[in-house]
Image (cartoon, rainbow, N blue to C red; front, side, top):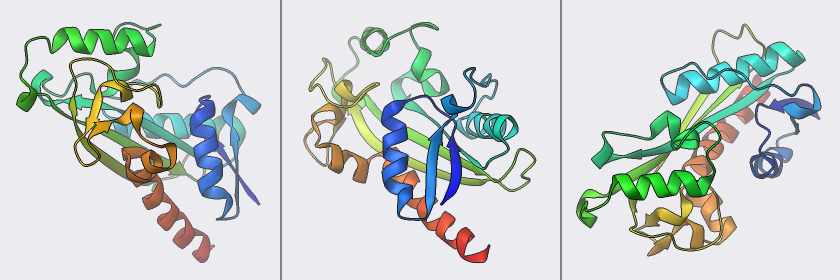
Length: 201
């Protein structure tokens, strides 16, 4: 089994990656097994931040690394919160704080103008100086509700209405969410690219 470091301390993300990549001959280990501090996310795009995090994990461990950067883009807010999704209501903000701020910012905005999408960018780097990281991008279209629904998922899931399934993301079955979500789509693309990459090496 080839070891890959996941540049995240999120236990839910670690489980998702472990399930998906174990069949490809990879053992996914969290960065917390090696170091505790996070990379400074100084990029202005999801792509830049995913690369910064993956490069940092490679440099710290000497192993290949995967990082993801994800967030939600709301059309009525000119794409905010975007790369600041996790800290929208402040550096130490919890999901509930971020959701409350989003609802406040969209107060009075009609349903047809509350369109939004989740983005997830995954970066796989073989080493810290990798000049050609594998990049995968998944999106998921939805509409922002006027109040939270459901108790599954995390982030903005209670406010993210999925028109194809007539429910909030937080009300979806976990397996179904993994199949149709932004991260699920990016992961499937990464799986295909990694299996091709492994076939060449």
